[in-house]
Image (cartoon, rainbow over all chains, first blue to last red; front, side, top):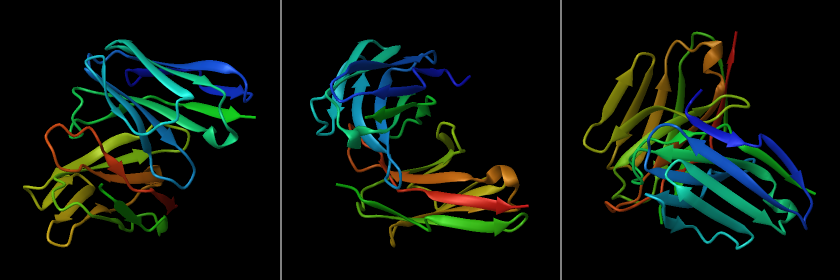
Length: 114
Length: 114
């Protein structure tokens, strides 16, 4: 158990569905992240929350909507996705939001958009 | 922004041999360089990192070297074992104390042949 839990592990959704990914961290960290991992591409930072405030939004399409109700929970709400959004979505946390603070990743949600 | 190139994309070595993975970065102000290991079906995990005030750091069979003049850093694994088989990602931070970005390389798939 790494302290960062993601659910669900796998998700298949149609292009018109609405679903949410959930992440929870038990490490007492102050920052949480969403990363997208696609085959043969670098890990792509999507969003960063530091002390529940969004501090980074890397030009992610509006069909991805993050929510951070407290420092332990992070959600990624999905709607009207495209097939190219199929990927592994990784949540991570760190002690603080600075890039030099080591990241602790969850196991990820494998998303397939049909 | 920062750009990180990682080579090779795949690497096969015999058990007991050494493995070297190299990364180059573009932003000369980058000053933190972590390495993450991702085993098949598992989450990325930090294995070692180096800051720009040192040229080399070792942790048992793993070492990282940094050449700031040439803007490249490398991961060295000695006496490789089958459990070293994984995808390894290098990363670098751009400048700025408030930076939340960590730019990753595309990864190197290391296979250690028994």
